[in-house]
Length: 141
Image (cartoon, rainbow, N blue to C red; front, side, top):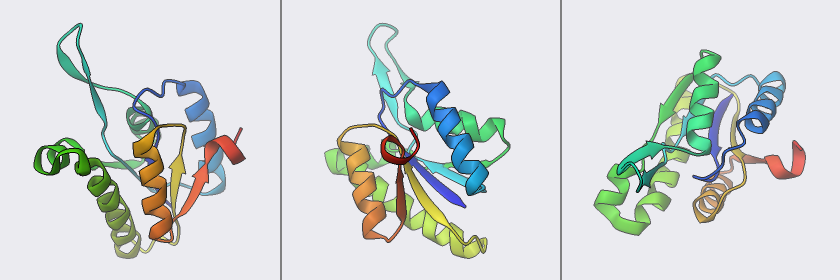
């Protein structure tokens, strides 16, 4: 399965995310992971930091030797401003569908964890592309 992960930039419950991802992976083996590479600016250390669900998912994939692709939002925001995140989410759906076809993978899902407007938009994009969404707060708790 191809898994497009989405969730909040301030999501921090690594233990919960790993448990849910392991459960999903046991039912639908994940072959390729895709996430948006969200970063936040830490004003105390004055630099951008990898944070939130995207990087929890990235680490989970790495630990399980699953290919993980990052469609970083930074270039999208630089080029399109606030619309960049929505356009990047659209691109993640397109990339996922193309990868599914190219690798003869039969299943693609968007795995959604709690988040804000970006997560909501990713869910809407996935549904618009007929990608089934696993809402972890409904099914996997």
